[in-house]
Structure formats: C-alpha cells, structure tokens
Length: 183
Image (cartoon, rainbow, N blue to C red):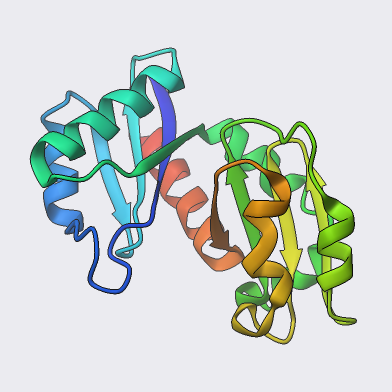
C-alpha cells in the first residue's frame, strides 16, 4: 500500500463547490481507498491505496466528485514521500516558527517557463520566495492576505497550483505518518 495525500483546489470557498469532508471521506472509502482521513474543510485527504499511478487516482477522484457533487475540482495527488521531501526542501526553515506565514504551492508538474521576475517585481521587502521543482515556497511574514505576490503566483508560474500553509502541511504529514503506521 502507498500513502497518498490528496489536495483539492477551490472547494468550500465562499459558499461555492461545497463538499462536506464526511461525505468526501465516505465517497473515497467507497472507491476502495483505505484509512481515509481528512483535515479541515479545504480539501486535504490522506489515504492508502494499492494504485501505483497518482494520475489515475487523481482522475478517478475528480470524476467521482463530479458524479456525486456536480462539480469537478482540480485534484493533486502526492505520495507521503513527496510531501516529506517538499518539507525537507523548505528553503526557509526559520519561518516554520510562524507557520501561517509560510506557504507551499503544490503543482502537478514543474513550471516550464515561470516568470519569476514578475514575482520579484511584486515582492514586498519582507517576503521571500523560491521555486523548487513542483513546489513554490512563499514566506510572507506580513500575511498572505497583504501579499500582492501571492495573488499572482499561479499566473507567473503558468501552472495550476494549490497552496497550503506550513501548519496544514505539517498536520497533513502527521496524518500520513499515522495511517502508514496503522498499515
């Protein structure tokens, strides 16, 4: 069995694309995924599966949500090892002390032609960012809501992304480790 992390994009935001976690958990369990756990309402799921291909899982989960709930969210699947590697590669470890200020933007593939110069032009003096393969790291100590850079990340990367703050990433990793131990 492989430990997977499923990150759903754009659900339960502003009353749109409502997807209760209890119902999502039930849907995934009915797809023969094991030890399904969710974290907060923004679409973070951890589970075990024998499926070797994350792209297959992503497509199946997205289609199942469309069939059951009438909308098709972007579904990004990572293995537990990939999430652990993203955490280890964090270029701003000192920012972990303020977990709401550190955001990781996850992408299905590495951006081919990211416009990092555009992001640099928007960067506030206190902000730092770095792109590493399929993860964009943003440290915004003044808050993500005040960051002009944060709003433009996806456009500059030219790749769909879904972001999580360090607190969420850490909790999701803890859930992944818990279900791996149960197996």
